[in-house]
Image 1 (cartoon, helix red, strand yellow):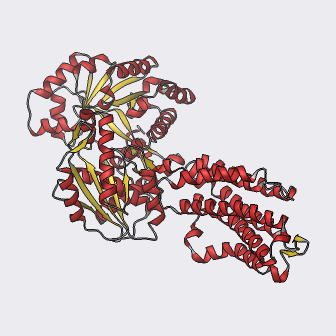
Image 2 (image 1 turned 180 degrees about the horizontal axis):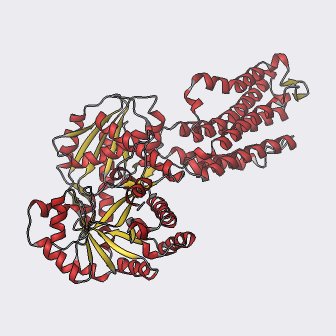
Image 3 (image 1 turned 135 degrees about the vertical axis):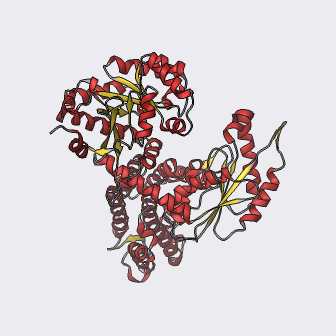
Length: 631
């Protein structure tokens, strides 16, 4: 009566699949728990599909009670499968209703009502019924498809409405297509009810989920066989608002130097040995490896941080032995208690980084406590990130201009363009807060491009010659400077605004000069396009006169630190340096000028240009025009 050709192979594949999945450790995420439910339910559905179909084919050999039991069990499992596939989609989408019991009860109502109808069908004969002739569908039988399609519709709705919230865009396609597979399975079952084909479609959906979301390897760090950083962040995100927990973090001091000393392979062995020890010593605790010698032990209760530190320090005083090698590591520890204050996950993720940094600074006898002060710092950093993202996305990066004065005449000679962004209250955020963040998250290129374009527009709209200005300096970040297409990007904006490159000088810092060949090649390429190059912050970093000679700079800007040092304690070094650079054809700009005395001394030692608060702070473009445009 029923065709079993597809269901037996599907059940065999599912059995192998289940055996492998349960052999590996898993992070107790809601999504992972739901997947386990799905696996168990799918096994039950397949087995009950075979058993009930076989029993119905030989109904005369079984009692009515037995037939009702196996068929009802199958249909309940079928409805459960529909419900839990939706719950998995909701978990993957991180839908908030999962945290509300009331909302979950409402979502589960179709499932619950279906169970009641199935359980009472032996009396009501609404869903199906059994008699001497065997199995018969009843008027409400199509509820089977209605409920499944209802949960599929909710899944599709969630996928389409939360598309932009997914962290990885490919997840959208995965969630969409495995629900399409399920839809296809219900249609095939509706059209070919005698073939047990839908189980095969559901198995395909499970395999798709596994390969895309549930492979335990995604959450494991192979060198230590501990949970990785992804597992830590996702688990904390899920429990942060629901459970109190404490994190004990420790970091191997000088990890990168030790890696060079021992070698990558040996360090991997050392990390594995540490992971092996942690699994034995801290049983039933969740242990994570957060890359580069950083470990985290998670407690879902209070813990004695001093006792943990004592235990770890005692172990790390002894060597880690593997084969014929011994490893010696020194560690520092930090501690974070989530019960101290309610911490949003976005801030918590920042505190994890801070905890690793503080642990690296700790000595053996202390445990750095990550508290309210660090949370405030992390919140501030998040506010800066949001403000910066908004400014970049809305093209709201402002350009301020700081005048650069002729040391001899005291008149305006040029200006330096500086990026500024505002917080939600309209206040200027200090550049030393947002520039490092922009460099870390890779958005410094967008910021630099916005500044460059707005400087081009300013030059287009205003006559620099009438203002007594010969140029405007625009800073290039190290990341911008390394772009192979930098020249093309710059020239595109210059052409659009019909600007002569002579009006823009490009400032690069000594940070660019780590790779001499890259510096020379990129500098020559830019110079050939007509731009002039200025070396910024000389004396702050990799000061090297030989490398300076290799590049076509026209001006060297002395970092304010060496200017101030000279003012405090004059010597022959700075005057000799300025004289040497001047004799080589470089113009010299002194930064950080704050009073007339500093201006006079820098002028006397031979600096051609002066820049600093003595003349003006960086001004918005309209204020700069009001001050320096000749009426």
